[in-house]
Image (cartoon, rainbow, N blue to C red):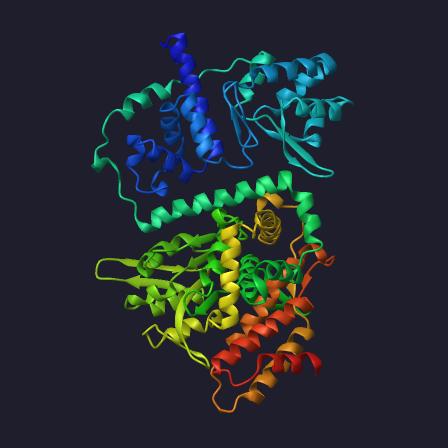
Length: 597
């Protein structure tokens, strides 16, 4: 920064701080959108945010293009991350509100008060926290003070430090990166200034960027960038949850279960529509892919499964699998799904899916496909998609390339239209082998009955009038789901705080399934069974995934399959068997027999 006059130097410092603020406040996708809205040439180079690989450079260029008035306007038009806190010499972001007054004076006053009360001990704490995160035990090793608790409370109250984690009996603190230079000045620590990059970037922005300098990014490389962004989304959400809502989430978990979820959905969407959303949210719990065990050992099964909603158009399939999981802010429908673990595939061809799927090898995500029919307009797609459903090894060859081999380890949530008859249905997908794919998913048929039509119109009216507002309740469920997912997948942010628990199936599970099987077979007049034994496996996986909702209700070192979850699993088993058998028996009659015999 040497060679610049004072005015230029201060403006360069502001640019660097604006860049850091923008990175903290917005994900890469928002930075890309804001840059394109401002018509900054740098951002015009990239057709999507995933191709913009250098987030630091992007934020610096954006920061250099803004003044304080433009920055305020951006924060008014684009909502920043809820968890983001920024306290720098020039800019402050607290609870979504931007201030351009800076935080230097507040930090100086806070440090002065701490020095006046606790002397060199306060200075020792601040020196220990510079550049790291620490808890009380860490600090006791370097700061020998009987008033350490009081010092930490004073510094946190003055906003000199922040609690990076706050629980009942355990806390961690840190000094924000942008606050650290102010603290260093107050402590008499000299910091070497960084070189002035913003000036160069402003000059660079005026130059047209030749197209040939932008390297093409293929589906696989682009998707790996997207996976990294989704990982970041999960980590940021989980970090915010652990810091701000952990105890509330655990308390909520002690009353939550599939019965609670069912009541919550029925109250908002009615007795017919609620069940599809129940399936979608339960599938999210299954994404932890937890091992299912019995009293004598492993079963070889896990909780993950793929979901298909099929039937007449306009029956609410997309609402359940897409909007309830990803959220629909304009209708006040909060996201219920795991953040960063649902890949929306609208407009993606199956060939592109197969090429980008390698980025997910060894990972467990959910692929939401809104128009599954479209995947089968392309020849040769059944076999690789069947392998994907089986979590098998995929290899795809054309005359010009070979994709794979790689093992696909994720799941699907799909919708597709079928020709619905008075009894059963007929798929409109021409490939005769499609039933091999359908057989590998938990399927639910939608028939546009008068009752469903009425519930759909009522729900649409409620959404239009804003009388269905489930953003707050959705957050509670999403927090619980995300925390259970993090615990059961061994996420490092929760390591050591909660125990891993497998799902335990008992003889009762097999008793109910066997009764259902016997009642179904007795009612099928033909000798040929039109559904496979995989149906029982999916019912078992559903019951196990649903039982993970009871994680905090179980004081055991495993989660037993609950009776509530088992009832819903039996309903799904009988219902799908009935539909596949052209509805030759009554669902209610079979379930009555299973639970009264």
